[in-house]
Length: 115
Length: 112
Image (cartoon, rainbow over all chains, first blue to last red; front, side, top):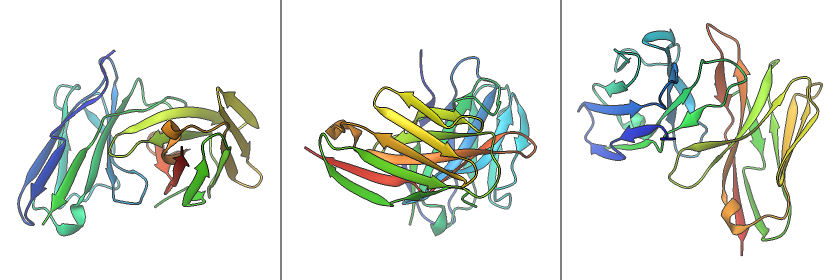
């Protein structure tokens, strides 16, 4: 079974530039998550989709971050404009239905460095 | 905000020894999960323990949960160099949907 795919794996940009990350979840998984993991910390949920609808984006900095999952499968996360403090690993995860007892399956992440 | 806090932040042991990591959390939970993250890679689910369970085993892993103290521990027995990784506890949180809140992690180094 193919896992969660993410691209690119690494990205270096200058502050105020834009960047986009792509995620392809496990086939059949209705729920998709984007996490931000700053060095030395645990992942922090940015946004959660159920199919193509947003169910939680309470910790997404909406002035600069946006995400979409138009057809309920792939998702993109965009930062515009980037700040130095956005340097982090961006992890995508998926789960079957978004229920409490489910396992979340994580992709390898995109490591972003903002200079 | 971080719901769980792991202790210790870092742990270095010799191959073959046991490793114990602790997690404390703040609010009531339905379940608690442990994940492992190897350097530069995504997280891998290890084990889930429900709030009505006190102990659970999976291979060389043993997890305990004390809801009265809002704490959990992860024991890895007979450690191997391949166990070197960061270990995170994650608790579910009720909101508009279920979501996981991760702790800050314990970085485990197993010396060969």
